Length: 115
Length: 114
Image (tube, rainbow over all chains, first blue to last red; front, side, top):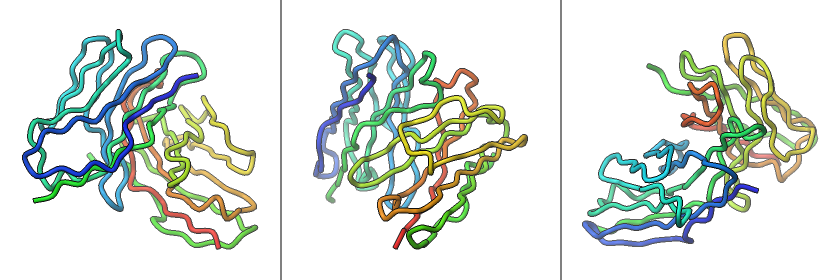
């Protein structure tokens, strides 16, 4: 079945450091891919998305490229800030019968950024 | 445009009771999905409704049920509560009619079962 694997956390970085959070997926067909972020005590916020191979999603300095050949969707940011401290979830959305409305999430990666 | 709203935000129930959670989607969104978030299992899909019909269902026991009204608002019900039902319940709405588009989440309802 469809699944998402993302790197275990927590990840601790200093402010202005480079961030990479790895995400790989297993899916039937061509899913849409997403990164969501969850701040303490809140629901999930959509960070970025990509709907087909080689698409690059970007938002607030974060980027991720849909790599079909490696089934990956790694999240990157060139210079993190303290305000980026949160839990990040990689997710995929199925396109075929039985998968509608069903996001499949990775376990989440907690990021802590120190001043 | 107002976001997804969920009520109540916090709830404490005892084992054996039942509970109903409510979700109002973003205006114009007809798809509503529900997820359970726990530290051990992470985020798990419960069910999805579109135009008042359950279109997809996750692997949860029959104690978990839901419905959607004509105005797209949705409720989920859990009967005969168990300690393991303690979780953050998240509702999400989507504009996509195919069910594959991005979903927008509410703040969640934190359910504690004692």
